[in-house]
Length: 256
Image (cartoon, rainbow, N blue to C red; front, side, top):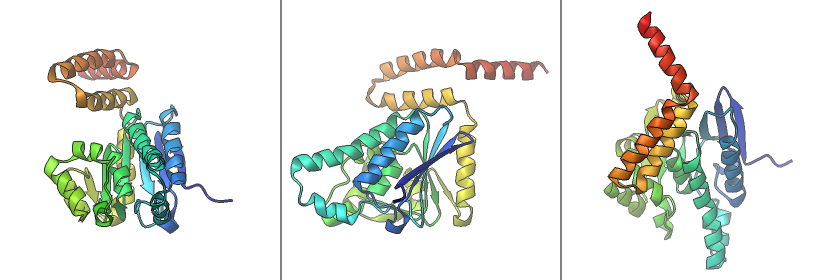
């Protein structure tokens, strides 16, 4: 049997989703994207999942689009190409709307569409030797859908340079720009990434969900509307079991 191109395991509150084409450096094709969408959908509905850790098998996180797929796009019409591109847009939207934090654990290369998937995650952890980039411009292409996310992740001028230069940057530079949150030594990367995921998994699931939803929904709100949304989420959070238990623990600790 052909092995799945995406695998998922849920353990200790962490859904580990792995891009599983190591022989192709986890290059993206329609099947992999479809399987990744299904894994994201499944993890969102799994009550045992508190955090998603997205990683790549083998030497790279994801090297970008499969070259054989790129050859086919040159022969397709505009409607076929739009339908194909929409699959990736739907993936990004599913990740944005996922009720749990999604962490990208990036080692090796995260290029083009692979960098897009990493950027679509809520948090990026990187090995020291990891590389990031949007080299699409070098073949006359555009990292189009991910710009909606990249523009919200780094400054406008940093985003512009990344997409028009096609430069591949280091993990430390990605952290300087605000793309990567943490950079770890290669030999400690797996341990540190797992520890980070475990740290988030230990937090209140309802608080994480409400925080993610509120923060991202503020994108299109006026200042007044954002404050009002904050009022509503504040009230909802107070009524959750996690918050009530947390307050009780705090008060008991204060009395002792």
